[in-house]
Length: 279
Figure 1: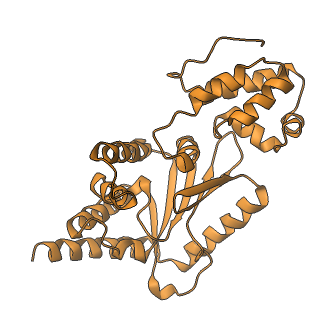
Figure 2 (figure 1 turned 120 degrees about the vertical axis):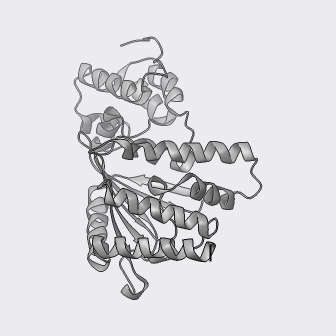
């Protein structure tokens, strides 16, 4: 596969690049573990590149070209994959999210992106960067809303969210914005598109007090977990880490209100915000 033409960026470049990687690896007679060892990553990481659930970085692309004898094919084409409408620290996670069959998330401080309304997303992004031009905020909001289209599919992916009560009571964008946001979550829940549990204040100390987490499962690739902080984030595929955080999420669901009681609380708070906005 020496020097093939560039991939078409309009045709799911990560999937195409992953297919080319699988073809080149098999042509070279290497297993995923063997190729991973040559470029100092795990075999599961190679599997994720081939499945399109991980973004190929330039340093890895250069090593792949060297090991597989593909001239500069992967280095040249990974630049097309790097183009994203999302912030750099979140881009890879957002792209992986789009291919997940199940997403389990704990959100301690704000409603997560997949459940946000445009008005709520605008308030969050404006708070994130108070000096950003309005056109930039528009782009960020559109990027966030494009992610929510995952929920337009009638069956998948499974989305299971544990919301800290703090995320429901923090008045982001004002009371009318919060009323709309909570009504939106209630509607998604009643339509069976998401499972939501609320972790109430009176649950006390819990296993994820250190921050948020997002677990993603895939049909043809190992699971991933995403950690996020202030303007930073990373994906992790270490099996032991993923297993530990899956157990963490299970403990959170055990400490949280049932889905039925959570829905009742969310809708009651939505009514409170509505009535307080329009006495």
